[in-house]
Amino acid sequence: MSGIVELLVSRGAERRVDVPISAVACSRDGQTFAVGTVEGEIYLISVAVLRQPEAWQRVEAHDGAVLSLVADTGSGGFLSGGEDNRLVRTAADGATTELHKGRRWVEHVASTSTTIAFSVGKQLELRDASGEKTLKGLDHPSSVTGIVFDAKGKRVAASHYNGVSMWYVQAKVDNVRPLEWKGSHIGLAIHPGGEALVSSMQENDLHGWRLSDGHNMRMSGYPRQVASMDFTRNGRWLATSGADSVVMWPFFGGGPMGKPPSELARLPGVFCSRVKAHPKHDMVAAGFEDGTVLLADTGSERVLPVCMEGRGKITGLTFSPQGGYMVFGTEDGAIGAIDLSSTG
Image (cartoon, rainbow, N blue to C red; front, side, top):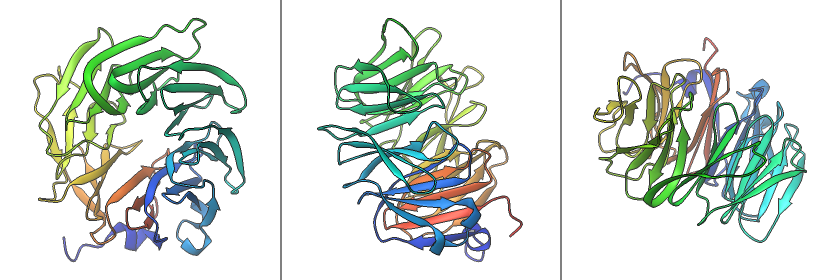
């Protein structure tokens, strides 16, 4: 791809912070991105200064790695869990508020506009939007390894050893729906229409359940563990890492059972480490272990280079909710921000 103009050069900016990036998120109003590091900082990138990296704000949010980072319940701001056993709210202006401090890491955090979920060991705690009121604590048979809400925020699922537990957020009596499959489940994605739930496995596989009847779906053949997956906006495809391309499983026409996956944006010998579906278009962003970031059209297979290799493994990648902006971070401490709506 030599000679091709990278979007990061023509429409973006980058900054080196020399600390590995652990997570990237965008606020619900799409006006601010947050980039967490393994040393506990959060860099706030306002879209107003997206192309002025010297204006990106550094916040000392945690004493230890930022383990999870998501949009806050309100329009701006973020929630993060860390190795310092804290759940922290960071406002768009950089002000921080401690919402929880315990004796174990806060490893996973998820949110809707009305509910916060975070895990400490085997327990999943749900709080209201203020973060001050605990709604319920939900116990699991082993440590929670992933959390996801459905699109309406009515159900929340937690992965753990030997399966996934699904709960109704507003239920007066908490009856778990167990989705069982032996092995270590390490991450979750839920179909935007609520049709299926998919977990990534320690053993280089995916396992899914059709939620209408609990039917099992196995998706295998990966050379590496699947560390990142995301459904496309209409739920037709599940984009995944774990190979030297974006592996796309069809969730239409009877798939994925009995249907082979498609591949996008293949870089021979270079493994994909992060994927993120565009929220408004049939497009997937793919980050690779050599630092390459590509945008791939799921229909035409056309590929646009966001940036080429040389910045370290991509460890965080997201779009704004309207899809006009994109931010990524790398293991070598590079942060890139791109204005996809600009004309260059």
